[in-house]
Image: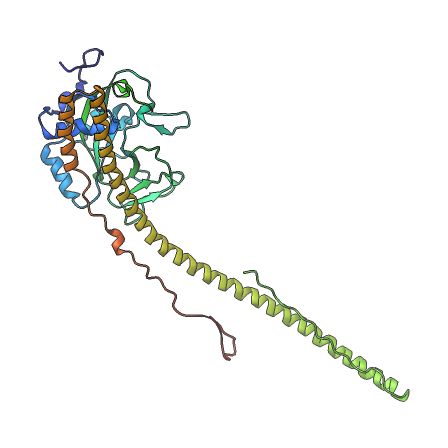
Length: 384
């Protein structure tokens, strides 16, 4: 009988009898045993059982089909599974995790297991849980995240997975020190539930002794001055008529000039709007092409940093177990067993080649000039 840490004897759920049980000596069992300890950051987790949803050959086939693509582990606390993806439902679907709305996809986490959320809805890690042993059940999945598009959390649900990407990576500025990453996947073929793990978890066993263009348009006026008076009185009347004629002509000309000024100003505004529209279109094109390059670079950057953090996470957990061993919390035999399992996990550590960034080059350039032409095809004015 498995040790249950003072809890009632564990009774396996009925649906487990339809799944393939693994023996503790099997490699897959040991991988799940150590993987769960790593995810819960607890060297004293007692695994009660590991059941497989697929055959070993099917699991190998999935990994082979995704060879060269990024694949991450995910642990889901089974009480948190939606009704259409309970263990019984997944088993009845041939071991498939179903997505009800592919346009929204499904959100998964990878890394540290977080069992609860605070009042604001933000998750926090299991280290904040109250003490006491618990019987827990987890579903382990392999997620073929592939090339991930990085998206801010407040943008989730507004846009689908962009073309050319396989998943959405939720951007996090502050991970709280945990190795914790979230992905949205909308392709069921990229979600592979493989094992159901039951365990006894008591946070207190590990916590003993540990502390927690403004443009300006110029205007002008034309002033005409005329000698209105002759030198003799005889000429006054004649000059007056001439002046009146001239004034009428000037008024007509001034009116024509006002019309021309209005037309030129309107033409300027129309041409300026077209220029702005062209510039905006070109700038938007420049932005889109630049952003596409940056998205690809950011995708690789985030994945490589995740892999680097994963290795640090593994090292940290080994050092953590050593401290438990030195304090007498962890039994030497368990430490040796965990060390053996650690080697298995290291052998399966991320080794995918992430090199999409090599396809990105700073090769955008501007070609041609914006030209303003007059209708009579006279010499054009070039805007450099």
